[in-house]
Image 1 (cartoon, rainbow over the protein chains, first blue to last red):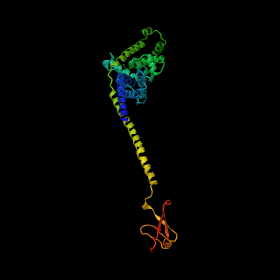
Image 2: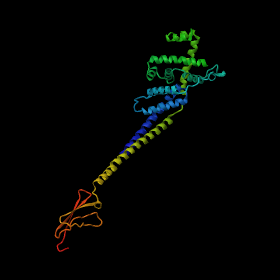
Image 3: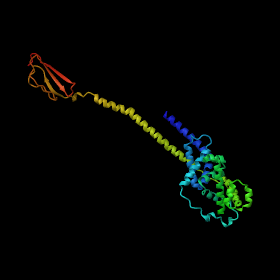
Image 4: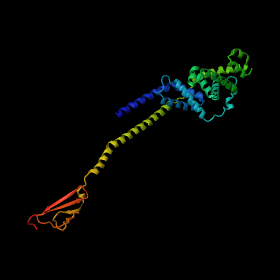
Length: 174
Length: 168
């Protein structure tokens, strides 16, 4: 009797583990990408992603339907926590930020992306989350508003401000 | 027009194109915004590392540890139940048995002696026990009754001795 129950428990645990692995495979890139844009460092993004999926595993039975909104919300929260906890990063090295003489005329996409990643870290927490979800992850304003728990008009305003700040950040370092 | 004024103007939903046509600073900024938007899209193709195996290994090790803990507790509980079911009643019975068990005869101590009627004063003694008999020598044909008291108040031994006629 006990052996039977034990076998059933192991089997159901294995099934849950397999189901979870499938969910993780489907959403890992989304979570990792969001975490990387929010944190700006791959090591931190990996830690955050791991934490998000461990939380997902704990709450697997409580999440109904598409886990994406839940994953986005938790990713933003976990990354904000990481961002607040981590040791402050030194201001970007101006020499590093300045383009090399050869790239002065044509700003390479890689350079812009690097500057954008740096610029994201200078944004306010809410602005960064809004712009990452809207611009990088391609969510609608309504979805972003639901995930962040704010009004759509607030999201629009945050994204607008963030775009201008990022544009200025990149322009000033070209 | 300063940039701050431009942002305010854009916020008021004025015609952006008209404004950009006359403001070089905002035109440059708008160009940056457009270029950034293209860069945002190209981020989607960037390779990203995976943490799937790390997470799965962590989950498996944690669930294994939890399972070991859980079954450890179950085994401990079973052991306690076994002790309660088998060992405890046996021990209880042993204790009760010790209380109820009669004292072995060898342990009985026969201490005082009561002598029956007509007995002589010569005490009857037996070697090896603690029996003492006192009183007169029994008259012929008289029955000598000896009451033996033991340590146990519930146990009294009467010893009746009748002397045969013709005997000394």
